[in-house]
Image (cartoon, rainbow, N blue to C red; front, side):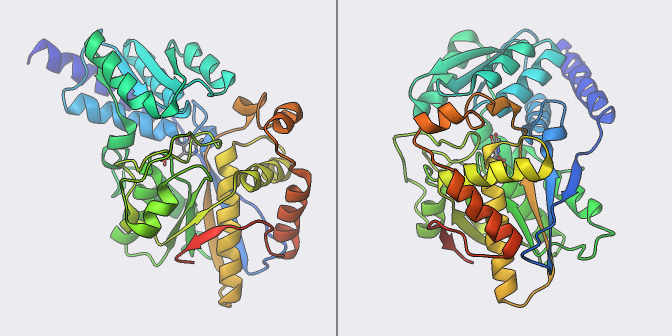
Length: 364
Ligand SMILES: Cc1ncc(COP(=O)(O)O)c(C=O)c1O
């Protein structure tokens, strides 16, 4: 065997051994008093060692790159990220002794940059969020490293049929519930990879579950889903870290999605604050987006006279947003007045009332 094959073999063993030492993430019920016939659960991806759903993706991307022969001992790994993926990839790069450079928008929370450094990674800040891809390619070219490119490879690096992917884990954890087969799975798109895994899995396993994808305000995914136009572009980044993109990423697969909604950012952040209060701990903004998606699905079920369950993704914890989404001064400076919106989210969850702002819906 060549030295490179031997190195890759050992690297794969190290990642698989790390996986064996890891536990699955929890599925947490969140009662909805306003919807007596709907059982809502959150798949808590914040309990991964690196704190987000991106831990699964980072493991898959490293294994995919190793099995493709793309990584070399000593050669840097480079990633374009809004932060969460970079934290998780820094963890795996350190496990393999590889240098890691994260190319992140300058607006990324300081807590995330500190976490990347904690795992030995370097952050390369880019003022224009639409330039993170080109900058990553340049760095990889000039350093002889490898650009991981989650936005292209997320959907194909994950084993969508099973192998303890997020979907298989959800169905296994739901086995003894009142409604074991969810009526809806709710996920929000960054790469689109998690949504792709969920959508493919429910089809492959012949479930009747529908997949609802909840997009952010400053993002092209919803409009592209509606129009079929994959060339749409925006010149600004999303304000909900981790989700919403200025271009339609290759890993976004519209044909495995049953419905989409576009959630105003203020509503996502209000729902995030409400969810944090209910759970007794902070969660990230995209988990708020998913709560709104779940409430729209719950209202649709009630209208249709349907009893059943919904599973939404709790994407990451909220401590990494302590100086932004959880800082009143920061919220005020950004122009957010959340109190009334939080009350409206509370009224929806607790009394089944309508949500306040215009939420664009397609397929539901
Ligand atoms: C906090 C957070 N939520 C949700 C997502 C979306 O996941 P995916 O990239 O699988 O679409 C991301 C992706 O970066 C994220 O960081």
